[in-house]
Length: 112
Length: 113
Image (cartoon, rainbow over all chains, first blue to last red; front, side, top):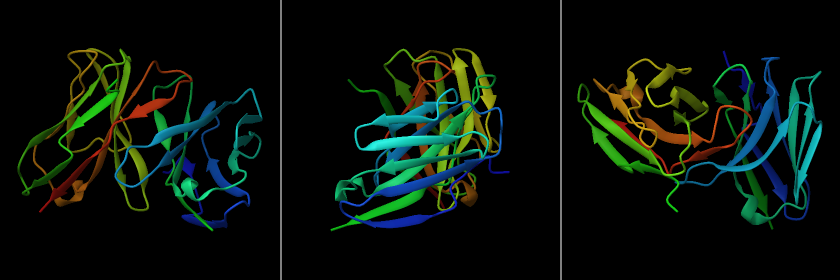
């Protein structure tokens, strides 16, 4: 029972264009959402987060959008750079539990 | 500024052997957890702890034991390794349980033959 799903295993984008990574969740109790980036042979690193009281959070080239009614969030990277090539995980947690649940990941490749 | 430190980085075990994956954090975080990463499965929560002396099961706890005797350390024990436990294991810590990001170690790549 995958509570957090990333249905696109991979995405390929040209440098300078927008990358859009998607994430869906099933648990309506989730109220905090995060995106992580992972390079090979390294641990995941935190990128950006959003609380359920917001529908958008922006940090430089990264913007996360949350659609609670659709139980969907997305990460926009503009402009995409070759150094953004990595696996991206979305994650979710609920205030009434202690678990941080991750999705299956999307491998982003940014080509010149 | 070490953050979350995992040892060893690589390990090969024979089926039935036991071992302990070590995890230590120096950020005085209350919350620690173990994940395993498998192709197509993402990061799955094995066990977690909200403080010294308190542990609980995650999504895939079978075959693993944990304990939390100090705030800093959270070892993961495999009592009788199976090939299905071949994976990359990540330890993570969070300042507290609510609305905070997790910091991850570099991972331990475990192969069970």
